[in-house]
Image: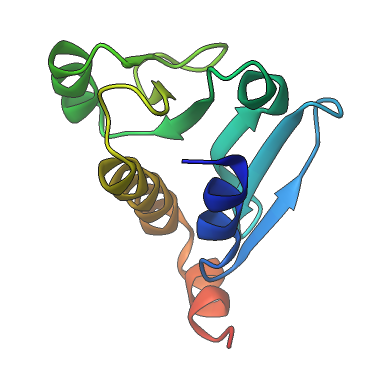
Length: 122
């Protein structure tokens, strides 16, 4: 996967915006102003791309045991976030599934009013 594929996949999801809230290096994707994916651009430049994704806590532990490239979220709540190193033992297809999972977790946690706003977006 390349940074353009990661960005294009995230940005085309309903209600998603991209930001650089921390510095010029950390690209953050939010759905309805709630973060679901982030990545340091320097990790892509160094050919060791990593993305942080929200994950169900039980599944997060399971994934960490199964994949070398999935670890507790770097600089994140390690119970709820994983850092996934791309282009190693996680296929692009599965990485996209993990992005979907993170997005879906955030959407499910949104208040009803915000969910309704999301559903009404074209």
